[in-house]
Length: 112
Length: 114
Image (cartoon, rainbow over the protein chains, first blue to last red):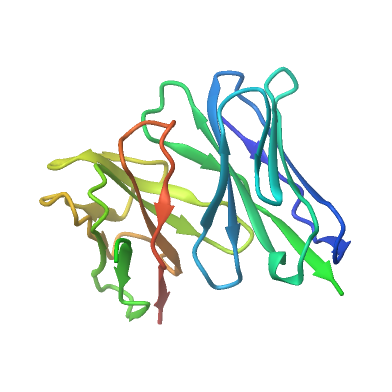
């Protein structure tokens, strides 16, 4: 069974610091990796996606993919209180058409 | 204003009743999906559709049914056969089918069985 693992947290970081969120996955055939942000009671919002090994930057967010070690991470620089949310990692596997497998999410708390 | 709409936002159902959740998108996306989210669990795929008049079961399809008669609409029926239907239901769409395409979510419907 394909699995996506995330530490549930909460991960607490002070305002202005770098938040590092990690996700590991079980299938080496994985092709696509997505990070979603979900505020309490709301639906997930796509932040980043990455397909190739290495880093991908978008504003304060950086996604890092290491296929050899089967992990993907999300860095949030200059963390703000508005970044406090649950971050979901989703992985797309080869041969499963449009199916993504989601982790259970990491709750991030940015403190003043 | 392009997006995905879901209705109703909150839905209460008595045991033994079927209910239908609406999902509409005006993004001209080919693929649409239904997920269920329970507290402390990841999103689980119920059904997905890659083109009109075609859909496939996801990981937890039992007790649910769907139709895809129009590109923009993908309603989900929660039947009385679903043993534990209380959950947050999320509809998503992507421009094309396939795991390389980003999925975007609607606002969700929170279903409670009384």
